[in-house]
Length: 391
Image 1 (tube, rainbow, N blue to C red):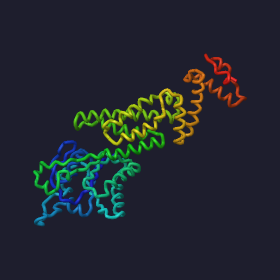
Image 2: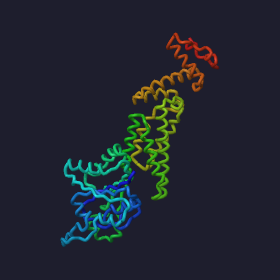
Image 3: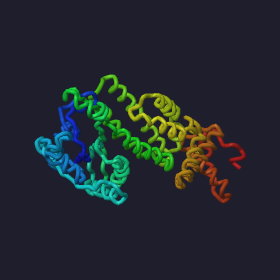
Image 4: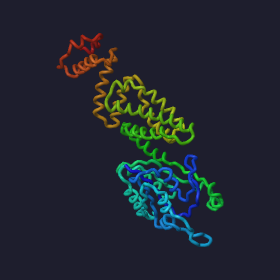
């Protein structure tokens, strides 16, 4: 499973500055790729890759050396291009440049999509820099990620944008001391994660399965719990919220499993109120992926009908199964809950095996008049069924 850094090189004559991630300014660099690669990729292995995508113009102006001219004198400006700068970093990971068209037509945009997709290996863990992406690239990337996640099992470790423009107009920034030019790098990874959480929530609502939610929670919460950089209060707050989300998703997954596996006792006795209360609390929290709150409302609505220790939960579970086409579960849950309902109405312990077997025999007797009534099992009960049922 290899790691890959993917970035698109632009054509601008960039100014030296320091980029800051999480209020931690980096070294003075000309290209944002230098900073992001230094932070996240310098410990990578030979099987990992730095992939830089360039148009012909970007290659000439910023990949190769001395690609720009002074605006006033028209003389060539002496500058090491990104290619040489990455070479000087002596990275263990291999550096590869890919040629792409400008993207001025639909065909060219599809060509870019295909080139990036073909560069991906099965199981690649990607860090993506969109700072100098062409107009359509960010949207193209989001589509490509979903496509490649399914077909090549890739995962996204980070999406970053270096906001040099936040320093002001280039003519103003040019007059600043280089070391005072500190531009923020925005971590946009949560936007891509939101797409995954939305898809997983949709799967739960449409299919009744919480497997995708459980898988995402395990991955994303684990990442949050390992976080060490940043302000301590913020980190601890995020960890507490992440743990709460984990508890909620584990509960939702348990409910889903109970229904899928036709576990009658668990369907009736589960503490749905605790999950609902946690969902309501979470919706008012400053959660680490903020737009998750409305998704939690969708999940809460899905569970709204269930109440702890209510025999009717099983009938509600039957409706759930019918909605999602789980017809085998419908038959099993309905039969089991008929037995539970009869025993409950007769004031008998519905969880006792002998009671359930006797009730099952009674149902068979009513359904088939030729069936043999087992007096011995009936007599073993401390309380009898009603006279109507015995008849």
